[in-house]
Image 1 (tube, rainbow, N blue to C red):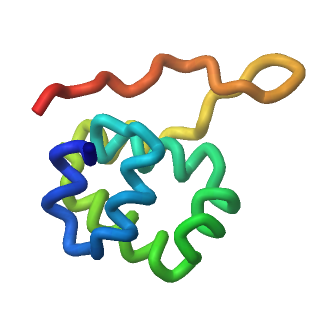
Image 2 (image 1 turned 60 degrees about the vertical axis):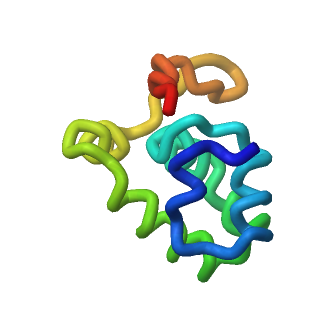
Image 3 (image 1 turned 90 degrees about the horizontal axis):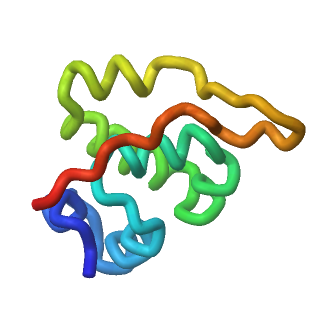
Length: 92
């Protein structure tokens, strides 16, 4: 079942189902996934569609969330794993 925020995006059911597979509970979480692996994310949806969907998701962010998304991804370790805290999940 898609997260509530996905139901309100102006996208088709096929794209909604694809985005739902990521399991993101918030727009910020989904945008963070794209930021962490942009090439893979964009190739999964198609670059133009991924850009359009990202624009719609950005409209749903609070000012604080938008600012946090601008920060560089923190990575430490041999494999560059992201070690900063995950975005908090919201119920809704």
